Image (cartoon, rainbow, N blue to C red; front, side):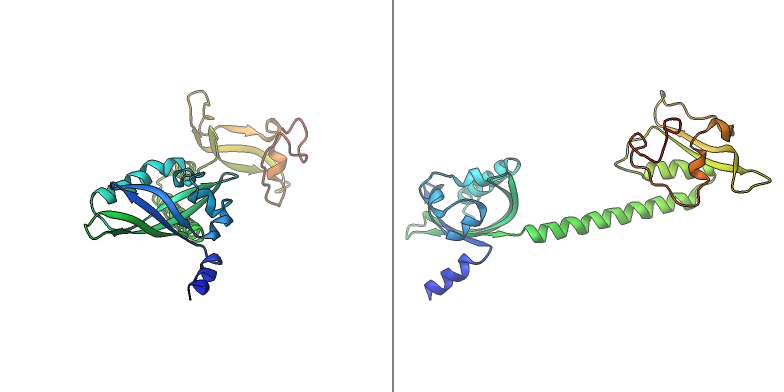
Length: 244
């Protein structure tokens, strides 16, 4: 029965361990299941003391994990669990849930910590994706609400600008194209209806300014029927030097 149970453990993402407790402090690791090898270590690395458990904890979680383990012992909390991030060779990070139980002798002294360390990376990834989706949905809702409540085009432009994240820019303009009376596919001028500048250095275009198309080389982009997506105009081979 033990052999069959051990075979199941070795194929699972659940690491089983036992650790000695001396004077209410965690001491040497007595046993670790062999499936720890999937994280780049052997069971002997831990039972020999060559690799302390603390070495496998993410530096940002190390203090919290240490305080939790020691604090629970000293406060006589015999069963508990918590999440933490593990770090392994190659800077591989994995999320775990550690579940532990303290065993005591006939005098009530803690002598052993037994527990499991369960890989929950897939669960955490799904959780982060769900939170990101909810956050994005809320941002879109807030942006739509601001647009609906905008009293003029300047407020519309400001709402759009302030809803954009992760893109650095210092100016934005809302422009209407004055079309050629003889050829509606041609643009004669650009009329600036709303402008925004993020810094004093980046001066906003004067509101109501009308710029002849001849003074705006990029106007030919707007005359085309397809949508242009420009990632980096400096390296875009669709544009000549004048347009850049």
